[in-house]
Length: 158
Ligand SMILES: [Zn+2]
Image (spheres, protein in one colour):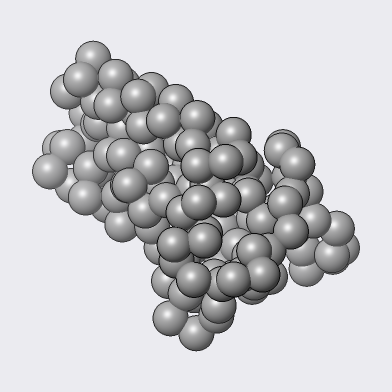
């Protein structure tokens, strides 16, 4: 998935959480956009081809963080709900990975899961060859559907 689809999904979670909890969307929308993008912060220190093999892409991290924050914050627990939902939805979207899946059982098991066929890394590692592979595989449609659904949710609930 791209930064665009992760950000739009985060915005739609923010709008939905605001509607459900009554917390101001000026907090929930930017919070969930940021949290939806946060797992990919490891692109600063990891290559794109292996950035799912890192703690920021372990569901365990987001569950533990959300649990800790849940006990530290008052009701309606907007931060812990946001960490859990935005963190895990990032990983669900990444499980539609083009060349890499997600280690859902890490750090306890290293098995990599993917909803779609994992294609080999392109021999030419240029951005252009990555974009070409994105167009040739079905992932462009998964991206489009994600963008359309999240845009609709934002439009319908905002
Ligand atoms: Zn990611």
